[in-house]
Image (cartoon, rainbow, N blue to C red; front, top):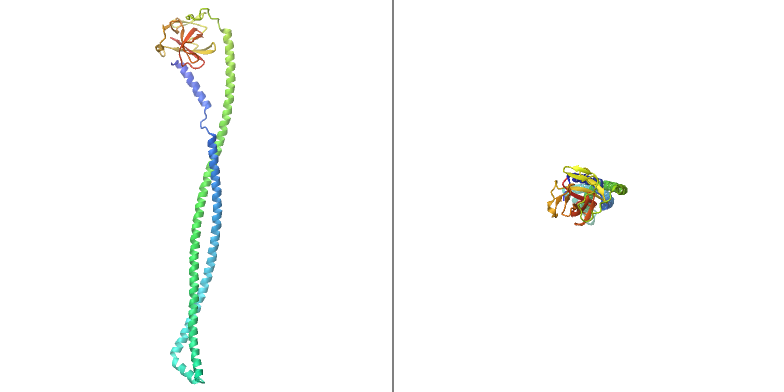
Amino acid sequence: MKRSRKQHIRCGVALACALMTAVPSIPVQASQVNNLENKTSNLKNQLDGLNQDLVAISDKISATQKKIDQSDNEVYRLEASLKISYNNEEKQYENMKTRIKYMYENGSSTMLTLLLKADSMADFLNKADFIENVTEYDRNMLENMVKVRKGIEEQEKDLKKQQQELSDLKSQMDSEEQQLKNKADATSTDLNDFNKKLKAARAEQARQEELKKKQAQQKTQQTKTAKKSTSKKSSTKKHNKKPSSNNSGNTGGNTTGGSGVRHGNYIIPSGGLTPQKGRITYNGHTETYYSQRVLPGGGLGIPGRHIASDGTIRDSGNYIVLASDDYPKGTVVQTSLGPGKVYDTGSGRGNIDLYTDW
């Protein structure tokens, strides 16, 4: 069933106010805070691990650079030795060339001079052997110097190869170090962001908990106030309630006595519900009316349905047609305008709707 337009507006406004008061804009669950705490802790552990890796690779880079510096010094020393070797080799080669040239140009006369000056053939042979030995010495010296030079060149070659390997290794570690620094910077940025989110979530959680406390206090206070108001209304109603007539039990149809209020063609007892009042408290419940002019209610199968002189819709037993969520259909309930019978629902707990033609 439907209520009057005034009732719908009043209920809608009350519901909107209740929702605005009771529901927070962005609820923060404890699980959200826990997730943020876990994420922040994981990021902190990651950052600590990255910093340890940075220290380790920095130590390796320093050790590699030290080896490179030592290798540079060794190369410098070998280059100096190689230069000396080249010079000695060149001098020996020039000396040998000079002696060979001299012997070639003066070979016959030299041998003749040695023969004439020799004391004996043995002396001549000894002097000839000496010249040959000198030539052999020059050749051996040159060969040794060449070997020394080649040895130094091999050492230099190996050392430069080692230098290149160390340099490549250092470049690789420099790249790894930069990658670690970039990752550490990104992790640090993420950690700062999650710290801010965690701080905001904790603040919002604290705000919501405080709001819940205030709402609980307000609800408790409203409950106390409502109880006091209900008690006061019940006391007032007991003082103002008029005794019902003796024949109002089962036959129905009799309205309360006293002077009446005219509403159009109807005369309504002034002591009960009227269109002007719209809502009253009576006999432990609230009463409102449902006008068939808003929505004609002919579909309830009410026997002997008719309109009484006070404008209420009644059945063949002269009971006022009622809607209630507190009583089963067919239950007879005493209202401010006389006895009524429940035919419909949808009035809401604690409230009874009287069907009228008002």
